[in-house]
Length: 180
Length: 217
Image (tube, rainbow over all chains, first blue to last red; front, side):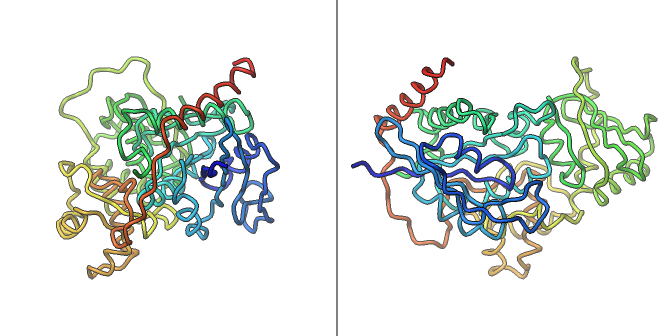
């Protein structure tokens, strides 16, 4: 029996984390949501973490979606320790969330050695920030930021493919690969 | 391409980083006493300022505009790129003036870095705004191996909140960047864990690509 691998999806509230996992999970997602006490553009928000699974060629992946609020910051680091990788999602139609997304990404990646990419959701919307502009905002190379539609299974799988190709290519900098 | 948003959520210095070396016009609607400011950008350099379409030629007025933009952060912004950039003046650039004003501005709490994010020195050749020079000279040696606001608050007379603000300003000036993939300096060494074997990555990629192939893409 293979050891499950952990993959984390983080980002601000409303970025599409729960949707991302629900779209690709083989099993019903355990989504720990509650009524939001703030106006976040939707009724429910994640208050613990989302959990789904994905089996690829017999290898089980555990998918974890983190809550977005700062008061859950202790959970971001815990979930990312020992993870195969991290996708930080940010909604391309919500530039008001970019600063918080950067805060989350900087916090996690300055404390945990985890390969990551940034996913810019809502690419199906007419007015949306493009991945290369988000890359400039985050100070990342353009190939570390991708656009996606979190409701589209094909788009989510393409994002996972891009992550694996980017993070584990033989020439990838050590900083992008997991601990050895 | 779409670069847009509410000005209260973004620092001008961040917007200029996004614009990078492009040329165009950055419109700040209702940002200066409900009037529109246009910053003419050539290859990343602010070369002219317009107020409701009219050029602003005097330095004091430009300074007042920058100060108001940085402090009040009102209105919305959008960037319209020029399809064919004009040659830029080698002399005119207002970026340093803007940077000097921005380096003194208060920053909303939600935009400050996390107190435990570790930062390291980045582009030490970057210009240091004069208002930050003393703080930079003091903290630069402490950041050589990386440090967070919380850690430096224990080692300097500065409180954590002020250090978070300084780190925000240093980052905006490209002097520091977050330390990616570092364990906290004061943490015990993490137990070694093996990288995923290449064969495993190959299997995962193969399975994902087969999904894509099966769906006709």
